[in-house]
Length: 114
Length: 114
Image (cartoon, rainbow over all chains, first blue to last red; front, side, top):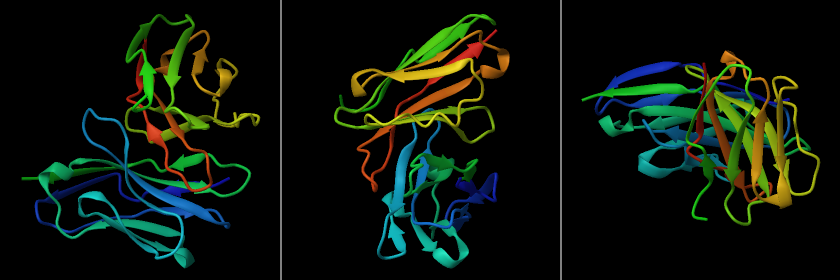
């Protein structure tokens, strides 16, 4: 079964700092990859996704992620964070096999200081 | 409907009682997921329904947990003889069910077992 590892549990940054959140997955086959965000008091929503093609994907609010197949990684980046980016971020993987459940990492809480 | 709807939004129950949590997926979505989110934890997969296929129940933590999906639409997650460790936010998500489709989440049901 697939698994997802997010290395950082809590990240604290000042506004305008650059962000990179790590995500690694374990599955040898073809996968779809996702980053979801949960703002305080709100439901989970999709930030960006990778299905195929260009391994550098761009999402909403200036976020991007790069799929590096050889490293089984899908790290999330943003060049300059804002206070409004304070939220919890979840990486998720869906294996394109018989078991198509969506598996999530443990999440990274990002706090951006004004 | 416009989004995934879950009810109730909050539920407080006494230890040992049974509870039912409801999820109304987005119309036309054939895939439905249940997750559990505990404080400080990630999203724990519980069960996955895809069309008329047998559900993937591999994430259900004990035989006190069960779920059904009637008519390929509404789903009910039932927890029998609730325990305090069942306290969590229970999230439902739905997707189109194709290989490359994102999951849309509801607001969740916050269950508190006292």
